[in-house]
Length: 346
Length: 254
Image (tube, rainbow over all chains, first blue to last red; front, side, top):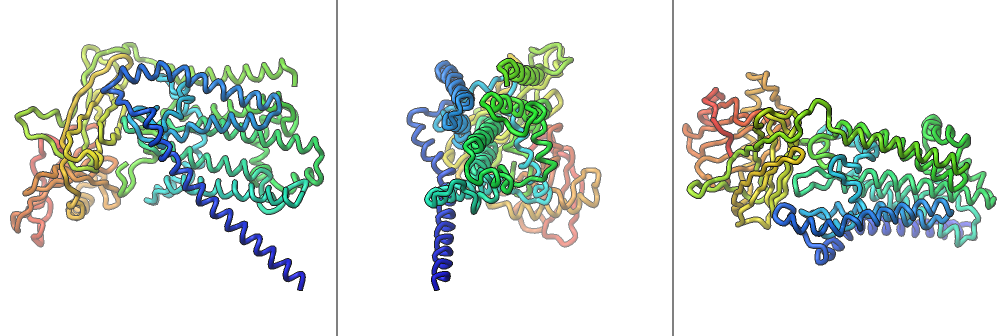
């Protein structure tokens, strides 16, 4: 009788938590897409739109102030991230990486002047928008999964571009919320190592959720048309670097827990993958540069972490360079790729 | 890891990144004259006060064709086309053009533009040299009520073209995207369709048989400024009316 009661209460708990996860996921997905609109309208009062052709003097005047602010913001973000790693202050690095990704929401606000309304968030991106070369595209290797998923459907006459961004945002938030609730539940149960529910499939579900959610946001940003008839530079480089920082933070956390010798943690790392399960040969290829540089499987000190970040960032930038050098995709960039679809004008 | 080794790794990474960025920033070789002057030409041109203005409706795709004409010794470097249009969305196809190529500036008026005149500023830029043309059109109240009929007519032409003119590479699987044009013309209606390769202008006479003719003219996108083929069905409702070639119009319809 007591066993049946325990079973029922456990099913009730799981049902309650599942419902909570779904509600939070739907609410946060909605907030991801609606809050920028509300915030953008409010910010328009302070940063109104300027027509660059009709009022070029006003634009120039604004940029005189915005340019140094942009460089200063980017410098502060870089200092936060590097200092976070070097000093082992995880929260500093998280703040820095989130601040680096935040301007991506500026793409959601359509305006003639790129810094109007919510676009003002993009001030830290100014250093990347050099007129001779668009540095933003040096993260375009990130679109590889997008290309692989979208193109076959497009050939079949089905447009999944926007749907894919939605799904990425929803799935990312689902994993994030599930991870957070599991972690809290583990803490309530006073477990030394949270290794159940979603933590059985990923050692860092919250970071994984953030990476997938931000990928969806990045795709949405890249899909926005540009009113001036220019091409949308996208935000692939910030996403790429932010994700790398997040992965380094996760590695640093693991190092701390390994050093602390938490009960059952080492055994847990053997059974659960770092972010998600990938074939052994893929993981061998991915970790090869690190093993070559450090002669071990993972960075353990702040310096090693910075070096690992720099090497992987360089490799990914190198892999993105064909997109930049070939100026691909042609025309209006990622907001137009892969091109015409039946029933869709662009 | 020693500070020296870390510094060496960071310096190598910075050097590699700087090298890639520099390569990307260097203009392609073989372009001796960067600042050669040029003019941009826009079709349709700006209407004079004596001429009837151009009209569109909100949501319509108003397509301007843009070309460049060089002066003196022509530079082979392409000219980048950009455009602005208040109260409208602008999309540009074939943004970088050289002489002989055609860019398409698509202006899509917003609902808020009804009753207004959309001023489109089209700019061509090559390094420090630029040229600008201003064109405008009015936005009338109305909605696209012609699409279904226009698509039926297009299908009739396409199935015939697929069989009789395979060299055009137009098949029944060719994807077309349509937009209404000339909303204020009543007796003869017009519609534009775009495939990846062709712009098709369909017009039809709203009349009883046997005067219910329909015509199509085709412009090859991105390298032609005027249509190169035209066909006519003398009566849409006649039982055995097939398309026949006709005199090709001298200009595109807008």
